[in-house]
Image (tube, rainbow, N blue to C red; front, side, top):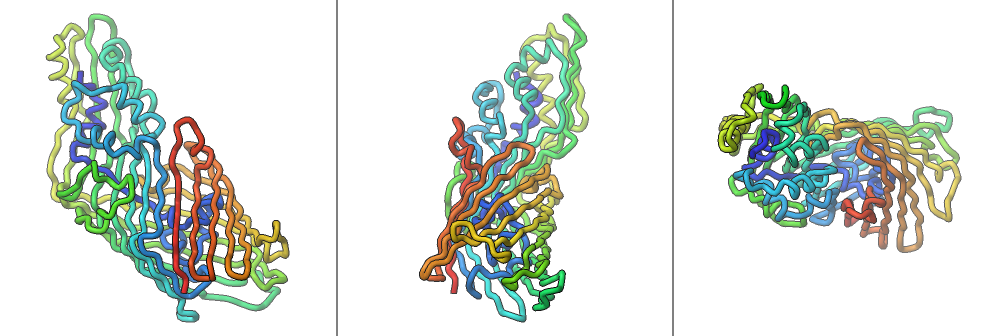
Length: 471
């Protein structure tokens, strides 16, 4: 049997869409410090998170990265390109191995993200302000499928005749795009008055061109229900969903960016759009060291949208309803259910928002207040983050992070350590990071935001790494 609900999800994936999103992996020290990006990022690391912090360079006036910053946060299914290709290339559901596919989708194992910085450069021009240009590639997939749906799919042949059910708001989407971003940040106010409450004020803005490579989006409001009145009677089935998809002509799921690849450098465009980021940073309360004791940061990043044109399609089931007799022959039942695959139509274009995120955070500079930990200069930080759009890459529910970042200087090297925890609707986990700067010009960092899950029975890979040159 071809159960309607799996048609809702998987028949829409015939286009083989898969994708990428997120700036968080580029700010590696903040990734390890409880994901407190909006206040603990510095210089290039702050792009896409809080552009105001570009005015706080990481040790030197000039920074550059080229193919040396990347990150992954993925379930075990996301990391297997062959499994993904098998799912996305399904043409018939009759021979589908349902046990395998249920395991693939359970617990968001198919969800994941990946980010790569192709080229980034920043310069602090002093009183004039700080400038940067970045070229980054992002991909993400979200498969938030209720357990009730997965159990129905596994045993659909019996459940659809014996029980009633109502499943709503399945979340399945993928996005892969490049962004080319110009950022400007400047210190608007700074004082040496030790009695002043406001010590400094910085602001930053980014303008970006977004080039879309592929998208799949199951819209909100989808549902699938079936009503079984009793033995020997009829089953009434109702389905409603809308799926938008687009991709470049040469898109290949077996070449999807679940592992490092240079293909994102030459990827064609399936759509384009404009976006923006805005952010501010406040330094409050003077300390004996002359630095603010408390730093506040807030930002809204990813404002904008992409208009998708290449291979643009809409699959629509507009409140479809069917009834069938329980005594119907198997072939008749299959033919009846095929109507719920909806109508697939090529369309000129459609518009989808960029992943927009609001962040607010605070950092207490313990070093400025005269405190050290084993010779390290510590900073306590927190961040609240909330997605503002329903596209993958914009968090569907709030996230809170709390962490500590520490730094110690030696004659030729600087050491950095960070740790903390972050919690969201799915889980809570420990974050951990470390880094080193050699001869005040080469800066390397590595971090994870899912330390405990790395050692679980079914590990979820999360790693961020960055190598920068400071001049």
